[in-house]
Length: 347
Image (tube, rainbow, N blue to C red):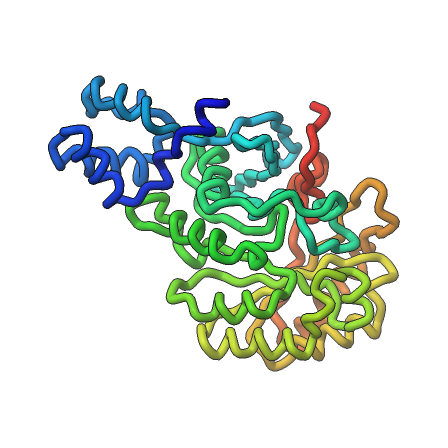
């Protein structure tokens, strides 16, 4: 551990920097390409895997660099096949990551921060506040860990784990680009979704990106007073301003944002709440994902009955608003939305 703190993670070097290292070690230039293939395309996690590099070169690289891959502290497997991992980085910081398989596809839910500063009332992640933001490499490493564990290619990634991605904007975008890189994991931009609580400066910057990444907004109420109670961390980003930022995003990108709406019994499933949501969405390009709130131990909030969720779906659809009721994955292992936190799990 001490040694790995001193040495640089080789995966943080650019192609040009790797070329400099190869030259410095007196190796021919073509070794750079081989090294790049192992690091970027094959996503190697050790120098031993690099079988077409001479042993001497591998030994020299071991002296200078490490692969700072996270350690799996614990894993839980859900009845629905989802797997939740507690991963620990070199400095002892840990995060939770979820792999969700379905019909030849594998989706990963990654964390962008250890903990979260947003303090949403229904979410376990924020109970202990924010530890630190993750680097792009640490975000990507979560995806690689899941891919290796399932021994399958990851087909989509949702940035919906711990943390607010737009509070860690630059590293989040760098991670998206690594995942999207055709010479790397080659996951299509439309299959990479970033979920924000509604951080307006982040939405505006996201709209400027050339890639077709997907945007999801955790809305949870279109009534300001309710949203302030549920999501105190984004109080300053009022609903009218949020609505305006989202419309600008749509105009600029032509892409359809989605709204996440966790239905909470007696809080955001009342008639006035439903009317407000219809008003917020009507006539705009959007897709609403309704989900029954996931039970979090210690929370007084309870999920809405499924009948209410279905009623809201019908009402939204009657007004021409695309709406899906999303099944919660991994609920039995606390791996569902709002249930992730950094703790050692009882297996």
